[in-house]
Image (cartoon, rainbow, N blue to C red; front, side):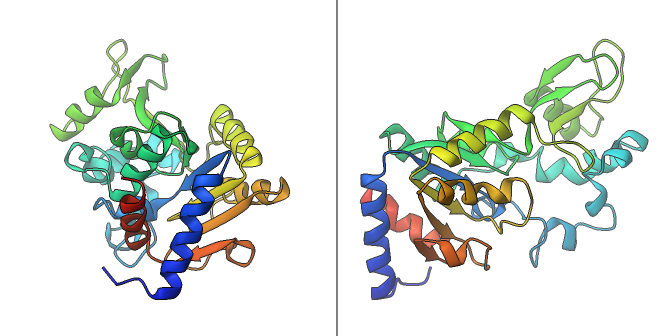
Length: 255
């Protein structure tokens, strides 16, 4: 990992101070956080859509799922249903530690990999849905991630125990609305935050990308850590580019 320059060390000091003095800190995480755990992002150089083959960009298309659910389950076999082999990164671990200390009040995530929960975060808001539930589109029967993952890893489509229809994960596909309760809670948390950490998100997917605006409108401050420019950079209190370096530093400051 690159060494922190003196100016970056000063910024890290400022971030630690902001965290210590925040009364309502909220984290907002995107795919960049998951790449540190070896999970590919979607649109990056080695992203799923770039290197995942011709079906990759169709894996979260709702119409495609109902026509041929095997497109989703084939593409997602390693990306989602191999998550038992993935471990939380230093970002996940530090956020869980900060929550345990009462510093971070909630983690809003665009990710569907369950790694925040695996790291120990209890207040996780999944604005793009979650694979923790798989539901039958025909009769509504539900089961958990473990059942679906075992079926997918065995090369089978997970099916409803009542009517045998192929189950759909409670992930938001293109063509579906975001889960209303999760989005409403995320908006409340962002609006209440006096410090919002934007971590590994390019802030291009709406409506979640507008969450920093709610924090700023309420008088809070925004910190951005992302390797690419974001729409929040100009209004950010602090801006870093390397998640690993920043959170390695925080890990030492908040052991």
